[in-house]
Image (tube, rainbow, N blue to C red; front, side, top):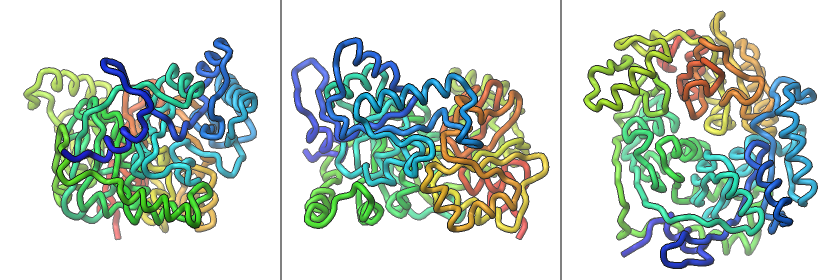
Length: 466
């Protein structure tokens, strides 16, 4: 029987296997940020250990960085975490991209930009959204603090094998439908536990037609369906993105790497443990109405009535979500008034996302009652956007142009949403309190975010006046 792409990469990285025990796999790239690494370094020091491969370990600052004034880190906890990361990296010989570094940015954004992420790699980081990097045909997943310590000490990870799932999006996406709408629809279809214990491989015509930015968006949110990772087989789109990047192979080494990368695909006779097929033509702009990413629906529909849900657990969850979100069953999603729009995050903070939003905001104004934050995913993206004049489009429309960071994706830095306020957010999680205590979050795509900012309520691009 043939192998799936995920199994091929896993088997290539196994360095020790014993019956009844997890496999020990080799790690090609270990990414760090300031939130998940301090305890791991403390554990190393307590055990008298050092970092095994600092050359395969890269750090950046993202979760706690200020996005308004990078010269002032006002929050004491944020400042302590950033200073701790800098000290740990300096003491271990680890390369770090700190504030004001031209390569600083959200870890899942800056690493691909540098060409550090390549097909066939095994990549880990103490952050669940490391799944983003599976868009390159890599096996990339988040790990816990104790595992971060283990990888720092040994460059290996003890981990159990996984099941596999294929999600095939057949056909072509319609006008205004983005990668974010695709993954929100997938999660709504299979639920937050639908991918539990699986690595999801995304396949089909609609997936192959996505840019690398779009593919990263899809893989990024695999964990919101409970999956361990998401993957897309590398192809010419992947290779073109990597060509010429700082850490990409060159010359004869590139040719050799390319020959290997082209073998990284699921065999025709491979069998997945679970398969899902979705018709791309059925997809439309999406938005979430509840407090987990599976509680979403096409934007032209209404808030569901929990009483219509046959499963008691789903019904109870929906009732609690609507109470927290202060929404009534049957409310048209497009009638929901928004206070804040957040464009950014590791899900949708790339140049393609900024371009899509700017195209809709050009010549228009953000609604008077709406605050819009635009936060690039990295310094390079910020500089590129400014070279293209996108920053001027955003500021002319009344949006705030910010410095790179995780920002309002989570309430871990000064960019928090006040209690009771409602946001349209291009980030990946809408849990209770995710963007601030008592804050209410609707997950949307960049074009929907831009249209919403203009009209002041959840809106599709097609709702904007010509």
